[in-house]
Length: 209
Image 1 (cartoon, rainbow, N blue to C red):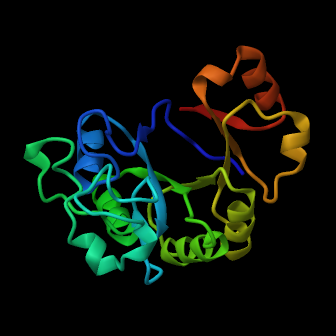
Image 2 (image 1 turned 60 degrees about the vertical axis):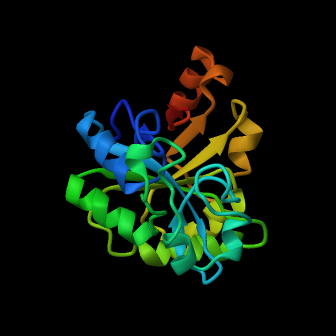
Image 3 (image 1 turned 135 degrees about the vertical axis):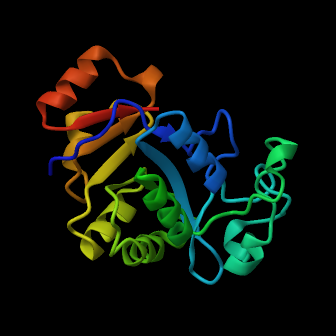
């Protein structure tokens, strides 16, 4: 599937100058000229897709414990901005639906990384697929989990997919993919020019982070 991607995608929004995975981060990314951002999504205790990277709350919020142990209302009441800077105090954890509305307002494409907590891989993939069913902006869904990508593809076969790797994938890795992907995402320091050329020749766009 052809997918037109910009040269730069804002990682977790504009995570260098605003709290990651927040509405404020998306707004700052757009101000900086980004046309797409990447966000991380997992499920709350009541199966609502929420935008947060870690599976625990301590690093980026004033909450404690697993994300998956709190319902969406409890997560929304937490402060996800003060840890970054006092000016962002009160910034909430967004739901995926809310972040999609923000990105639609800002004309931002969205790379959604599936980050399911243990035991919720298929459930997360299906919930995200249902949430983005009527998306109006361009979307790419990616994950380190091949099971998540397979489950998502079964639920939303028209949405383009990306597979994440911590080392450059070899031919055997590509053959084991559980869903058709159009992009390969790799750690920049682990990718060589030869790796990128090989993956491009195999028909993949390559994104580094």
